[in-house]
Length: 178
Image (cartoon, rainbow, N blue to C red; front, side, top):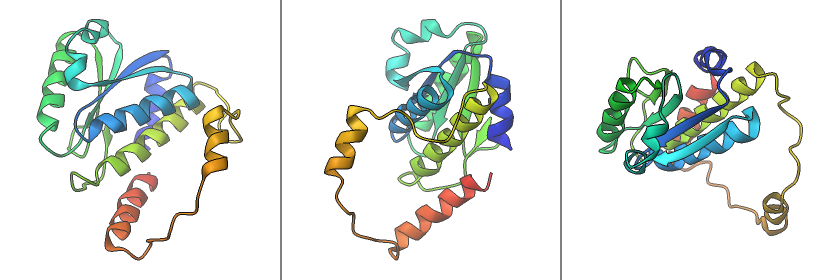
């Protein structure tokens, strides 16, 4: 319900920024890609450190900026950036496991937190695409990357019984239950 409601409030925006740091930066890259592919939103990913040196000027009144606030030492910097963005009038969208986040993630260790965060981004992109009236599901057009991936894909050995995999499945199912 959180992702669906958030998508409805953001459906009218054609562009946004996605900011993360530390383990949150690769998540920001994934979110931006999914927002572009599924929802047709021009989403630009940034490291929190890089965003302060120029792109922050694009954070105008009402412009959505997603901050990926994962556990660990980088969270404080992303949170400080969020405060600066609010002062500039940007529409801050906090993604965090903390109370008060716009999209709340399940609690997870620092090294594991990117998994449910990435899944949350995929869910938000799905609901945003629906809210914007874009078709979802089916096949996307083939690209050279997807074709190359099909050719070079090798079977991956199963590690389903590993204790860390059980933790990953648990975190992922907490996000998907949404």
